[in-house]
Image (cartoon, rainbow, N blue to C red; front, top):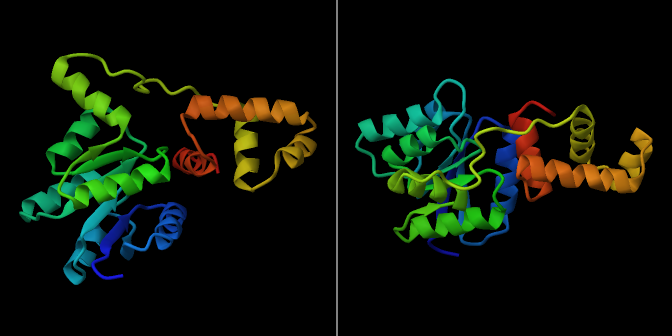
Length: 215
């Protein structure tokens, strides 16, 4: 297919880049042209490749997302950038948007939403996931956005054990046998875990676990 949307992934977690690459490899109109561990690497790769859209995280070593977008701005670059991050703090959202990010999606969003954001930006629009949009509107109107996760609910020791086993791709039955609990208890724990983390899928839970050093 001609006129593919060329993308560079910028994230210091190879597992996350691999997961995104695998998903996008199944989408005909998208091509992952380059990958970088941080903003510094991304700047070098942008000298070598013509990229339609950069997808970047914020929290990265050497050069984080804020520093990366600042550098692009200093170069008077018109590079389109989509931020995909677990960070939903007002200051960071505002900063990334002020530095030219055309979109901001939380990492626990469904992968289909990322594709929607990519297409919107490619069409000259902006795209923000619902929670990010609430933050923006809350700042404009003086309201506090609904459901902003200002205080994160910690997982219990047992819940962390189950997260690790889920990441090992164990079934509910296998987890139950390993922890000497019932399948129904495993299911209850998993519901609580998804509710606490705000994740909707196992992929989102994997990102959550990696970001917090659980796995």
